[in-house]
Length: 174
Image (tube, rainbow, N blue to C red):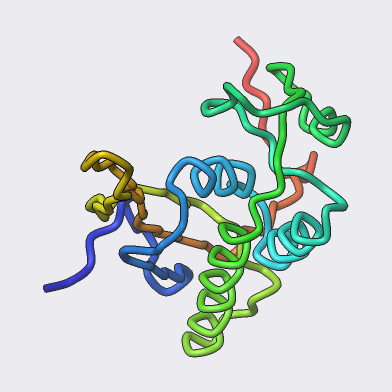
């Protein structure tokens, strides 16, 4: 059964895909990590994630931000909406780096330049919960559940912008 992706693939010759199922990483942290990568080049994403692992840059937490402390590194992501909260999710970053290296290998197989790839779509979906138990005193049992995730990445080759020549453009006067 073929893998279905969350976006339409218009040009299969210039598109590279990769997926990871049932990754044993936190869904919430991975979702925040991947949301900062859309629109970047693959090499730029790998460099950014390695900086996060080295704690030189942080991952801004926007949706799942409650209980996350403020850090000055998150101010770099101020744009349309202010962002002050961030973390350094190392396990999520390592998993996403592994997936991006898979993208680069797939690009080599398709004879595409890996430096020209831009992330068009990166999505994180919830996987089935892994149920665990923590046995407590007096015969009680507490739940100790994990929330893994599925990852999908689609990259496209960067399109070159054609410069507009003034002699070619026709201006219609009415």
